[in-house]
Image (tube, rainbow, N blue to C red; front, side, top):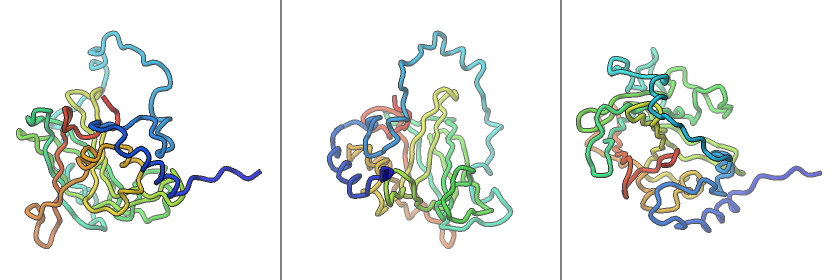
Amino acid sequence: MTPPQPPTQAEISAEIAALSGSRPGLAHPDRGYAPYRSSVLRHPGKPLVVVKDPEAVELTGPAFGVSDVTDLDSDLTRQHTGEPQGERMTVTGRVLDRDGRPVRGQLVEVWQANAAGRYAHQRDDHPAPLDPHFTGAGRCLTDDEGRYAFTTIKPGPYPWRNHTNAWRPAHIHFSLFGRAFTQRLITQMYFPGDPLFPYDPILQSVTDEAARNRLIATYDHDLSVPEWSLGYRWDIVLDGPAATWIEEGR
């Protein structure tokens, strides 16, 4: 018996086209978005359990303080003894609420692949080189204006097994913890002009074009440092009509 074959890019692209614009005005994708084959496994299959005293969770959950986050944590190029390979860059922006007010003191964490498109993770078996000088994880706290900033290298695209010839565009994962770990939200930032955008069912699962474009950073030449790094700017809006897509939904 011939085992089932993974769908082709053409089949996935046809499914993406059929669903394009199907959720106008909605930043969050349908959790069962078919072109992203495993999305149906990524949400609860049974009724949610009501937590009778949600504040009690804060008494037993992890906690962090200002003293736990140092300037070195936001520079992903200085976490080892040597320079990582790749295009050095600064990524900065603001964390805002629905009214454009800054969200201060927010713990922002990032993780990403290296310049070759491989994560420093035991389950990443992509046959691309690991970089001994790049772990790909960092964190910082937003300042009084809601600003965050990271120094890192541009991640590379990488293959995944959603379908034949599936490749993820270069991206950085962002995690925002709110006032407690139980409020954690996760999203992704992409880079302008990536040719893989139309082929990626994860990005295209955000079927509203305006919402999808809010996931793409802007190149900012004023942020670029001569002979050192390129600059990208990306704001994160937590809720409201201009909200950034958050993976965990609302």
